[in-house]
Length: 279
Image (cartoon, rainbow, N blue to C red):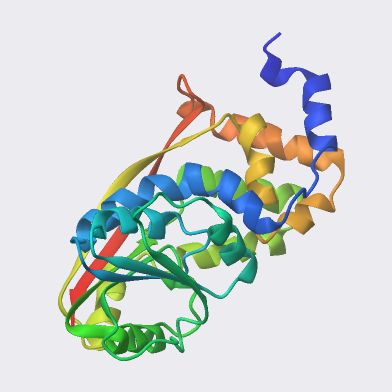
């Protein structure tokens, strides 16, 4: 029997759905390497970071993008990571930083940036802008803290990948439709024209929206799905349903993702838009 479909093994997994550690630690372990990681290089390439520049990373989370950006602006440059979530920043601060890289971590809101006018050369934000409650307000703050020759690079999903569609549907069936709807915000700014129009309306020039196709390489559903859910805001809701519901959720995901199996686990297409602009 294929171990993936061994009922005793599956039962053990779903019964051990425990929210061990805080959400930020789970996010760093299960979201950052598999979902966030592939999106960082194209965003940083399009941001065109250079040695000596000062970079602000908004919604930095546990700081993956900030750490990679710091490598690109060395020597002489510095990165500041800002987030509203103290637990995310705690994890960011605890992760080791290679010698020679300079990053400062700040708690704060993108709608009221705690920095002087013209403090940065570049502002970047990966998969955070669409969650801001006031898009124009955030963009005006970005322009304020950029120097006269500054630039911005922001990435958002164009829409959900087959994995996220299947996950939403499985959560709706086995947790609740309301909980599934809560995932929609992450995909709320998929229209490239609207995205670019926001930057133009905020006063940015030379605005371009770059369509970037990616492949997310994920572990097999029975290894990954519950761990992924444990790192998301809906984790407590998933923890509150029974073992039978969680087992059915995994089974649904295995069926939905069968066309994306490769030698590692899953290879799932995902598309993002990266908007760039200059002050």
